[in-house]
Structure formats: structure tokens, C-alpha cells
Length: 268
Image (cartoon, one colour):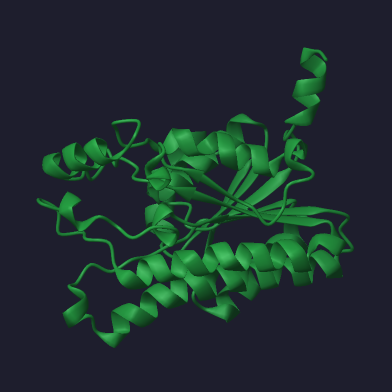
């Protein structure tokens, strides 16, 4: 086994990827990583201005290797229209990353129905609409193989430890965890049901990721780090290895799986 074999195994150059929620913390790092791997990036987000502001500097706003599209994943018509536009204009997309996500932070006793529905619409319906639109176009364009990676969460597997949130009002919600658990189950479902089309479907579940732009509270970071076996929060770049692996032929026999990147937190 030599370096050429490994380079070919993880080869992504020349492929194309559609990323939802591209303006978010993880979305931006994904755009950067795929661009550096020679992948053409179709970046989508609900807010075009925010997306351009955050992503233009990755390619100085001029590279043909990244194209922006405004899309609301919670609206089926928006997803169908955007996916169809990308496929018809630029050709089939090999990789879909369902990254867009939402949460709400009111005490559950005060949770309005609108907050509950919003998180359901973005996280669950948005992921489903992305998969549905991608598969229909996959069939229409007679593609030979495809890759879908869904971004789930540690809190789709375990419940948050609310003792951590001593100085942070962004307490994780029951509906966020429920939708992320749903994404993990949806990943298993489509891993099975799309295998005969040669579409691999997997998920990555991040643990606590430090946000340098909007830092979590000092006590939260301290408490989370104490609970985590690796004694720290993660950073967004530490998710890239799992996602890029699942995108590549190195994962050619991997489908329906959920890779947890959480510093061991779910092992307790």
C-alpha cells in the first residue's frame, strides 16, 4: 500500500457538493474544506446576504468553484426549485450535506407551538425534503452513485446534563434532541432504502462545539469540559474528518451509520 492508493481512496477533486445551512459555523468550515479539496461547492442558506458576507472571503467572491443559492429547507417548493436549478444549470451533484438546523431555548413549560413547529420544520422536514429532492433528481439524471451526509447531534443520542448550563440560557430543548434522534433514524431508513440505487446515507453527530464568534459561558465551558472524557469542548474543524471520509470512496461500504464526534461524552 502506498501514498497513491490512499490519495485515490480519499479523492474528492472534481466532484460537487450541495451544502445546506452554509452560513452557519459548521457550514462555513465545510465550504472551506471542500473548496480546498477541489470540490465545487453549492452553498445554500435561508439568508443570502448573511451567506455571502460570511463565505465570500473563502474565495474572494470570484471563484467559480462556489455558487450561492438562497433556500429555505423548511419549504418544500423552495428546496425543489433550488435543487432543480442547480442540477439543470450545473449538472448532477455527487454529494449532499444536510447541515441546516435550528433550535429553541425557552423553558419547556413556556414553549409556544410556533417554536416547536419551527424546529421540526427545519430539522426533520428540511432533511427529508433535501433527501427527497436529491433522490428524485438522481433518478431523473440517471446517476450511478451518490452520497448523503446528515448532520445530527450528540443530543439525538443522550439527554443534555442541565447541571452544565449554570451561566448559559441556551439550554438545549427537548424538541431539538427529538428531531436530531429522528435524523439518525431517517439516516438508517434511507441507508437501507437507497442502497439498491448506490446512494450511501450516513450521519455525523457532533458533541459540544466551541463557538468563537458567540462563545458559550465560561462556566458552561468549564462544566462541559469536566463532564467530557477528553476534558474539553470540540472545535468545528474536528468534524471535518468524519464528514470528508463519508463523502469519499474510502466509505464505499459504509451506509446507514452515525459517526459520533463528541470527545467520548456519549460513552458515560
